[in-house]
Image (tube, rainbow, N blue to C red):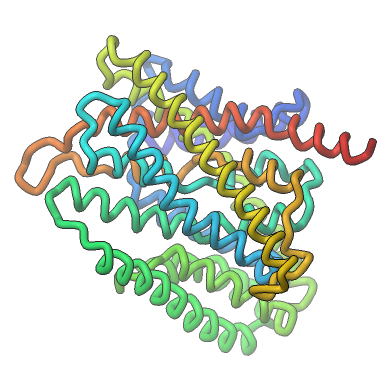
Length: 417
């Protein structure tokens, strides 16, 4: 079977498993990952090679656009302090924390390689968190913070990854240059998304009576925006997010109710298929990477992965509760224009902390590691980094994913008592 036939088969299996998951009360992402791992060990199944560039182009733009379009702009603005803390500060802190632990724990893991691993695992995947918690009745505040974090943190992680890989290849790291490039990438992505959003607004205002043309244009523009931004070397992630926010703001002015409903139905199907495909592909990748590791290294690498998972969770929990205390202190002192709506309580803080699963971005950038260095030598520890990265993704998705619904229900039950 060719790869495209396997993909069609996977989509059919994914739809069936999603229906089964509802019946057996298991979050469908978890079931898809477990089945993906099991199917991946079937000897006759051809290996599915994932091109990271395809993942970034096909998966990221529609998922980011959909989340940005549907997020409450008012709540996003209210919680911008927490969102930026998680999406920028925490990403870099996590990359550093994982790098330190990896350097001293894993044999032959140099500082540059440790930072590569830290950058790969620094960003959380709210696609996973929201897929698991969507029917759990989370507050708008919690949903907004998780979605808002996911809209920005991929850009931070990709910048950290770029500089860490450059360090492995021998490029000197200069902090002020890295900071300036990060700012330019973010600002450039914002500008691209804003300009294309205004152009789209101008066009749609004049053609919205043509339903098919309007919906088709709306489906196409996230991909166009991402490609334009990446080709001029600014953040495609931020560009697509800005586009979604801009279109969300003007949609009520130009979209008839019928058009909005039709567009939403199409997007819901696309997002469902992409989400399901992501999770089952994550599961399918593990067996092929597993086979590339020497048998004596399997258990140690799994242990390293578990320790890194715990470290990342602890760092996230500490940072979230520090943010909770900082917001309360600033609100009490009347500083920084912190409103009462921006404050975090214990319940929200714990759920946000526990929702830090890794996912498709970590998988893509791990698999996208260069095979060789510029001098032709093999990229050191490449198989180990990919194996540990995928194992951490699986640990967070399955471990935290299975316990998150229980945690939310437990906290909700306590509130009702």
